[in-house]
Length: 594
Image 1 (cartoon, one colour):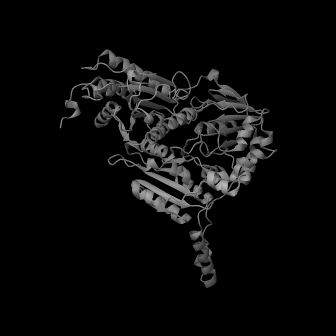
Image 2: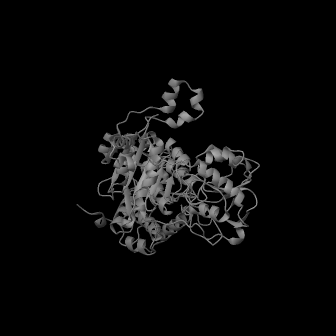
Image 3: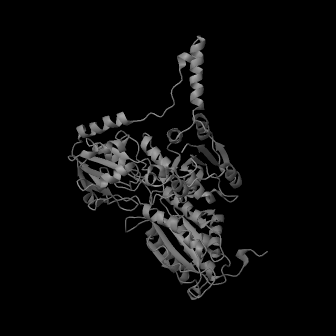
């Protein structure tokens, strides 16, 4: 059988080579491919780049899964992954991931193959209007010219043009020259023949600009001494802010710091140095340190604390509590929002957006002390009770038996949501990654968990359940590259899990991520039980269209997709699974009461 490199050259392959080589030469390391006919030149060039050791290739049959896998990679590395797909509905399946990337400020490069212009709008097979499909979300888009030429040595005009397009696309997705990173769409039309010999210059061109890229950047908490900027390390280049442009935060007004999704360590550092109480969502990456406020929802409702706030400094995008939303919408509170990777926050219509902040003046110890005392009283200790050592060692039969029975009761106690989130939090360390799905469970975690410096991810750009497993897979693959240690743990509800079961499928031969998917299975959408709909809907309608009960057998799904399966009904069993050495993919089901 004739190999691809022995076949005749084709403009489609040379054009694909020029475009992908330009991206790889500038630092792109991950390519996610969904197979198709019209995109075969791009896919085969990606395979050759993988063979040369220049990229990591991930193949997904579902474009929606491919898009969210790329999103997870972009979240973790702050560098875009390339997504390649064929024409038609394949392209539309990338819209959910592109929208999340837009609102969260995550870099992503969408390369969609297409029919040439003369076949659009004339009834040609698998053809729709692809240019402009992502227009409301992308930082840059281009409907490229059809490749017409082959290039013997990589110095032709077509190669130079596509290399320039690659440079412009990468700069746009990283937010260079603007502020917000985000998705970029390149629509790439091809005429037949759709594939030919891979040009001999591909590897050399792709490697020409390669430098060592850190795929595990630690976000800078303090970029320039007393200056603090947002970002959390997601899709934002580490560029020191201009000291003259930084907003000065005087310590006089009663101030709190609010850290939303992707705020990162900068929020904690700013609160610490300014002596400000820190309200840090569990998905912020800022919930650690001496200034964090436990039980913040109740304290924000307290007129003596939340009612007296005069100023809020916001990092990231807060989405998990109505109390924070109401605070940021108040017209009697000054709000400074530090620009980060995602959509800017302006709930009261008068929020001042700033690139960086710096503190001036002495801390208000009385104000901070009020919050810290209230926080201490609101802290919840979720630790299982300590064993009765004296009773267990007692020679008196009834004392020893009572202590043993108490231990057995602890071991047999069924898991609830509080114990579930506590177990996951305790099992996760700085070299691990923790991903939260959008569900009732993340709100329980936000309400109860204490401080710990771990890397947290969550798709809070649109707060949807779409693509959660795929996103976590992308995070795992990116964070564990180059034999780095750690486990990625995903905590989500059963509906979010079922919404993305296609992401459980991984092709043989690809790297097996260390990934624990923990499903809190309460049989449906219990998050709606706490919303307004529960007070107005009848029981039948509530169950039918909101709770949406399900009876899927997760063990059989795990077996079908090649995952190791565990069902944990007690805290002891869950702790054992979470902390045992993990070498691959595990699905952990935790049954929960509605």
